[in-house]
Amino acid sequence: MNINLDSNLVSTEWLNTHIKASNLVILDATINKVIDTASVRIPKARFFDIKQKFSDVAAPFPNTLPSVEQFQKETRAIGINTNSAIVVYDDKGIYSCARAWWLFKVFGFNNVAVLDGGLPDWQNNGFMIETYKSDDFLEGDFEAELYSELMTDFDGVNDFSKDKNALILDARSETRFKCQVDEPRAGLRRGTIPNSNNLPYTALLNGNKMKSIEELSKIFNNLVKDKTKIVFSCGSGITACILALGATLCNINNLTVYDGSWTEYGSLT
Image 1: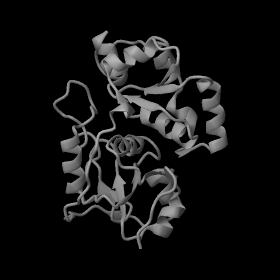
Image 2 (image 1 turned 60 degrees about the vertical axis):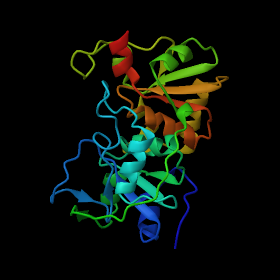
Image 3 (image 1 turned 45 degrees about the vertical axis):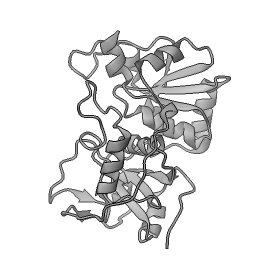
């Protein structure tokens, strides 16, 4: 039986109930994961390699958006079809999985959800896990189409920073946003995008799960107010997508992620 996802966030209990759905594809988007026979996964999960397969590795900055052709090729290689229902997770709870979820939106695919609590919550509930083994997938028929308004670049974020109708939210920690500590990337200066506000991604989480819709709505409503365009930034385009997930869950529209985020902005200014 095929399923359609009616939410951008699903629980581990929901996934355990629906895990045998014929069109379900589970993706492990853990960042920098070493896949070997000791690595554990939710049964039948496929590795979504953000760093090597789903980024432009030739770009000067990390995690840069891949081309339409690259995204389509790599999704087909792991057996994703136009009728797939995709649930994506990572081993921290909610971290890099939100980047994978947003990439699917950018490339025109909406039947995708983040697994709330990820692998930690799955294991805490005692659900079955397995070790990775070599998998062969039938090539999928996924067709990518770029929705460029969901991502912005250096020139675009400069325009947004001057637009009184736009709100830029930075997902980095308060100490990084306020330039009280060095950036973790060697050689990258401290700083902030002009006219941006700080919303640490951790403010949206209870442990490794998203806060309730009511809690998220209160956070966003206090910041968004009358702004008509919301732009998310972070260190290198990963945790900005957690803010995009939170805003999406609150039915806030006109969302954009700054792909290069502070790594690009701090390097070019």
